[in-house]
Image 1 (cartoon, rainbow, N blue to C red):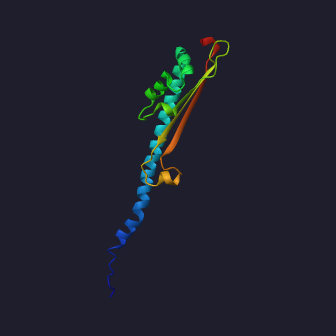
Image 2 (cartoon, rainbow, N blue to C red):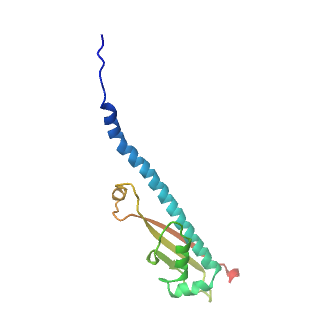
Image 3 (spheres, rainbow, N blue to C red):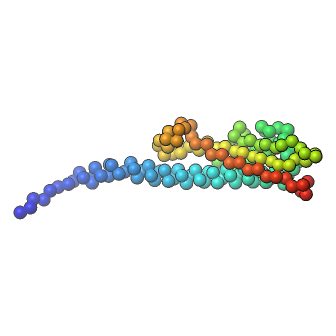
Length: 145
C-alpha cells in the first residue's frame, strides 16, 4: 500500500521564486512601451516645430537673435504630447544669414525619462533617469523666400 505524500508548500515556494521575475518582465515591457511613446512624441514635436520655422520665416530672425528664449521653443513644448519640457532642454540652432537669407534651421530637444521598473535606472548607469534626445534639421529652399 502506498502512502500519499503531501506537497502543500511547493506551489507557494515556486510562486515566490517566479513572481519577481514575472513582475520585472511585465513592468519592463510597460517601461519600454512608455519610452518608445515618449521618443515618438518628442521626435514629432521637434519635427513639427522645425517645419513651422521654415514656413514662418519671420520667426527665424527672433530665434536667431535670442536662442535661449524664442517662439520656436514654445512650439516644441506646444507640439509635445504627454511630455513636459522646459526651455533649457530645447536648443534652436540657426546658422548666420547667407546673402541676406537663412539657409537652415536645426532644433534639438532632450527629455529625461524616468522608468517605473525598480532598478532599471541603476542598471543603465543613471540615478536621475534616461535621456531621450530628438533632433531635426531642415533646409530652407531658395524659392520659398
